[in-house]
Length: 378
Image 1 (cartoon, rainbow, N blue to C red):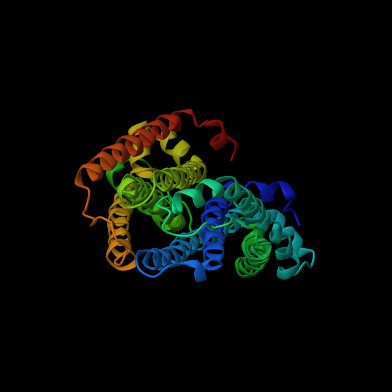
Image 2: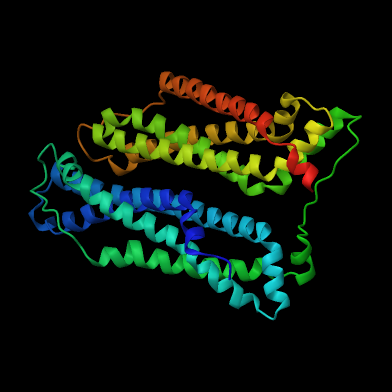
């Protein structure tokens, strides 16, 4: 099969997702295991309440972070496999024409799991670089006894080996499903969505039709755009509240993870949209459409999903922190009540508008540099 080791390393977005997820999960799980080892030394009263809160926090953080990253990574893996099959449909069609079965071809897609392996390993090692400070900050009030930091080797199996094997099977299974189509369609490069062009007379209808076609043909990218703005909104606003509800270290960690995930998914979405519509954009330029009209037809359709993601992220971070304060840390003394931070909301919103609209403007400008020669070569 034409899937190579180099192709497996191209899924850098999945590696980043896995790295962030494993880093957070390993820190909290490792801390919880070590915390339980001193459970018999915890005194009744405030110390016991803090102990119970830390245990609950570890479960909630691992479930939220690990669960969200798992779903996102699976969706991203599906997207890359579909994109790869569409881009190499003729080569795959030739293999099928020579008698290769879908399963035999699909086995090569297991190499995509290398992105999970690299990301999980990097996250695991990174977590131990941060963990000493994390342990210190978690017990900076000295209510709990000294919590020794230990390495639990079975976490390597749980957080590195198991995800890699699972994603390898997912990659094979999904590729079998996507390859279950007529060989002649693969040889001809036929996909479900076909680009439609007009003669350029009715620009308004064409641009609207083009915008609708971009959304329908790339639904996964809508998810990435929503996820990007969701991470930016929720993580940045949440990090600003950590100085009162937790430690500064926790706030910095949340901020860094949020920015990395937001910009990673945003970059993947935009670059893929531009790459997938290069021919459409070049054709529009041949017909006399301006760069602004090309931008409106290809990029502006993602504006509403992006702002929806921002709104969902705002509601999510408020709901999560409210639950943590009123439920998880309800019995812990000295934990302040949490109220919605309107100033931080508006600061985050302005920053999001500047970054999002600025990126759209830059990518709209880059559309001018798409060579028209590739259309003439078709």
